[in-house]
Image (cartoon, rainbow, N blue to C red):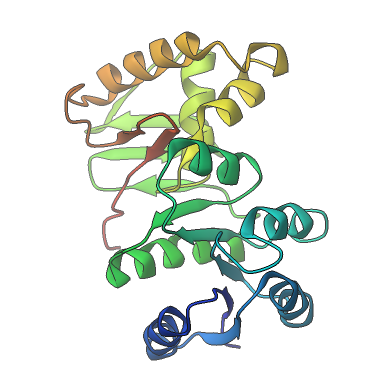
Length: 230
């Protein structure tokens, strides 16, 4: 069965470009040009992933995402010309899995789609990540670097595990703080910065140019791992 993707974007040229690229990868693509028809298409198709523009006529993308999250867990990649931190944080906190700014690289978008679809199709599989150097097994709560076990504090492990469950996707500071420290600490970003700093040290990350835990300035963090071939 083909993997289903719904594109909700009011620009016909963008929809056409994505339709061609996605169909060439074997995806089953449905298009919608506004928010209302997008929600109808999503309800009918029950897709594995949604690509959603924010600047839609009538019902904008934020409203679509808010409505969608009341009845669907399908991963959403926001595709928008809006590049401000507030827009990104709002969309990610509302339940989007990723945020790509226009103009964009089709190859990068396809890679992010593959990562999200893979995680969505196998939601109950234990998370095991291995790039030949770093190994993370969330089922066994086991993390090694170059074959040596890394000792992590409970908070360090919790942050790493939350990032690993959404590999290559942005997790906002608010999401991390609320999930790990509790709702009363959602503004205490210094707690998170300290834990991320310690994690980077233990993973051998260069704090100036980290390889694994990347900072999305003003938004949050993402764990980047290119898994090695079996």
